[in-house]
Length: 170
Image 1 (cartoon, rainbow, N blue to C red):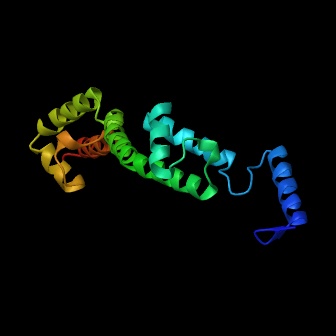
Image 2: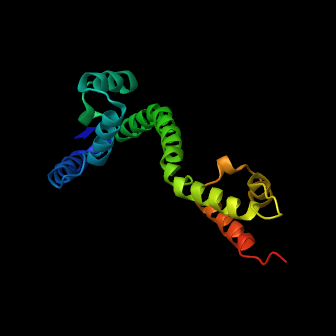
Image 3: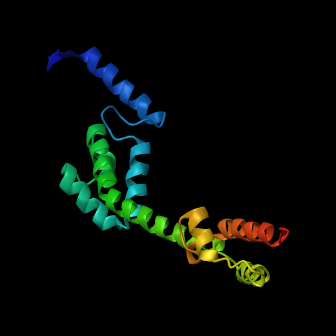
């Protein structure tokens, strides 16, 4: 007895293979895998979708109302679609993190103690015959004004001023 080009034995083997696959936790042939189902739910959670919204997108993309009954190919397409929807959101988050990262660098700014030491050193140096402008030193060393220097650069200016202050006034 043949049905659609398969013998009864072929049909029985196909059913047994499907049973073994479902018993071992693997998806039936052609069905979405458990990993892809997890990916779908994870992406939906990142997107902030509730269950109803996810199933609406599922129906629009695949025509199926059940996530576990879609094909592996449809599952991959659904994962790709949700990942595509997530890209602008992640891009926005990366931009925000970049901005926050710049704000986190506030601890690299000059300290008030460094500013006070620069003023003190300039007072000691400029009391003699030499007149030094700290802005010109900053521009020569770092190509930026004193107000834009970070902690490390300000320390370099302090060390330069110390070496100038310790010179013999000969």
